[in-house]
Each structure stands twice: as C-alpha cells, then as structure tokens.
Length: 469
Image (cartoon, rainbow, N blue to C red; front, top):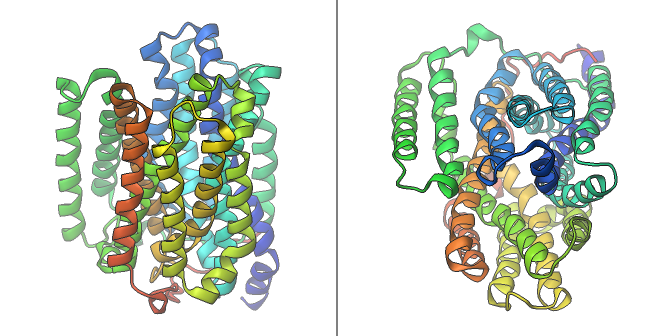
C-alpha cells in the first residue's frame, strides 16, 4: 500500500499531462469541426440545415452522457473509463476522416460524442483526488482549466491551418496517432482509484432517465435555430425531457443507491458553482461563436486568420491559468479571484457590445480578447475548486460529470439562443445577451458562494485503492 501511494505521488504530474492531452483532443475537435464545415458541406453534399448536425450529433451524445460517464468513473475507476472513452473517440475520429457520405459522418460524430463524454467526464475527478493539498490542486486545476478553455481558440487556428493545407479529413484523422499514444501513456502512468464497484452505486433507472432527459433536452435546444421554438416536435421533446428529469429527481430521492447523491447540492458552493458554470459557458461559448462569425463575415478573415485573431485570448488565458492562478487564489482567496476574473470577462464582452460591428480589429476585438482571456484564466480554476469542494473519492466522478454537464448544457443553450438573436437582431444585440449571462453569473457567485474555508475534498477512502500503472 505504501509503495502504491508513493508511486502515485511520483507519477501524478505525468498523469496530469496525459489527462490534459486527452482533454485537449476533445476540446480541439469541437472547434476544428466548426472551421471545416464549409469544406465538409461541399464534399459530402450537406444541405444548409443538415450541416448543423455535424456539430449537433456530437453535442447531443456528449452532453447527454457526461453525468452518467462521471458516475461510471466512480463505480469502475476513472482510469478505466478514460481509456475506454478515449479509445472510442480515437476510433470514431478515424471513421469521421474516411466518411463517405453525410449520414456516415453524422453517425461517426455521434460515436465521437460518446467517447468524448466518457473520457472528459472523469478527468477533473482524477485530478482532484490525486492532488489533495490545496496549493498543488489549484496549480493542477489551472493546467486543466487552460487546456479546457484555451483549447477552443487553439482549435480555430489548428482547424484553419489543417483545412486550408491538408483538407477537412485530416482535421479528424490527426486525432488517431495522438489518441493511440495517449491511450498507451495513460495505461502506463495514470494511477487512480479503482472505484467503489457496481453494487455500491448502481442505479439503472436513474441512469436511463437522466441520459434520455439530457439527450432530448439538448436535441430540443440545438434544433431551435433550425425548426423554431414553437415547432411541435421541439415542444414535445422539451416537455418529455422535463418529465424525465422530474422522474430522475424522484428516483434519486427514493433510491437506496442513487446515481447522483443529491446531498452534493445541499452545498452552496457545489450548487452555486454549477449555476455559475452554466451561465459563464452560455456567455463565453456564445462569444466564441459570435466573434468567429464577426471576423469571417464582417472583416472577411480567412479560417487561418480567424484562428490567429484568437491568439491574444489563448496567450492571456494560459498565462493566468498556468502561471498565476495558484498564487492569486493563495494570496486573495478563490471567491475574490473568481469574481474579479468574471468581471474582466464581462468588461471584454461589454466592449464588443458597444463597438461598431465593422470596427477595426485592433481597436475593438483585440482589447476584448485580452480582457476575456485574462478573465477566463483567472475565473475557471477557482470555479472548479468550488464545484468539487466537499466531495469524496466515492462521488468525485459524478461531481466532475455534473460540472461538465452544466458547462455543456450552458454552451448548447447559449449557442442556440444567441445564434437566434444574432439572426434576428444582429451581432450587437447578441453580444449584449452574452454579456448579460456573464453579469448574472457574477451576481450568483457574489451572493451564493461561501468563502474559502469550505473548499477541499473530504478524505473518504472508499474505493481509494489505486489502479496499477
């Protein structure tokens, strides 16, 4: 036992980097696919309405399965679920790259979403349990946060470069060798708890109802820009999603071994952090989408130039997440850093809201990129600390899955709503709506989240015997 713990300490930073490579693959793939859409449409004959399903098929599977995947990590071990998910993601990337028709690509993207959900849902839980000391945990979460947040803008640059030089197929095929290497490294170096076992947390009814609820809900949201919010199928899916969610909650209150321990949400920090995560994701994911359209359509930037335009955000976000997050949280406290970071992101979005739609990049967009990048880099690491506070090793996976679900649900809702607003009222109104989401997030964080004394992971050793590297 002593040697296993020592081995875990020796390899945990290497494990972190392997986990982050896996996360980077998943995050990159979302934005890389966005940039490649025009080429995909031309080669595979997608109609304009059908083209959205290259993104939607992935998003429905990804968002729908995050919560279940996080709980599977608790039951069977995060390392096992991560490797299986990354294997499915890598294999699906191969089929995306060789897709011979529009239906084949959509099916492969759905499978990619399943693998991406399995792999990404357990990463934060493994990081939190591997780094029990708050200073190291903040530093490790900063690395993860940078990967998750800045990966989107890196994906725009990489996607533009690959699509323009090698073709859209390689936007997916590049995942295959990286995925294989990451899986091999993960099997060798990741040390994580084995899990509490199926008998200690199985809830088949809960798993079915929440997965169906989330998939139907995300389907309804992403279909609004195409079919309209009053479309009978969309309304039916929305109502059924809510009914299934209510059934899930009732099941969790009555089940002896619930899929999601609702006691997690009795914590102001955990519940509040998930609400803040959803609102920030809606505003900031909408910012990525809107600013990409603004640069491409109004300023006539190419795909590669658009990726380069997001570099200020990537650099500033990385500098804060990787170099300063731990020091800032230690010096000023997680709550203050979260509030200041969110306020800076709000200022960046407000600047774009007030700027003319045809304003020069250096005058309007560049300062906004810097402010949003600094804000994201400062806000997300402490937000993740709040979301994982008070969890045990037995339920860290589901807490991680809940946070990821909040992020994806917020992103899906924000994208659907802001895209509709942009098409009706223009970019300025849509940026104003994104800014409002961030403003509400700041208000929730200021009024709900408690101070840093509540942070930390409960030392619960159930299922904590590490998997062998």
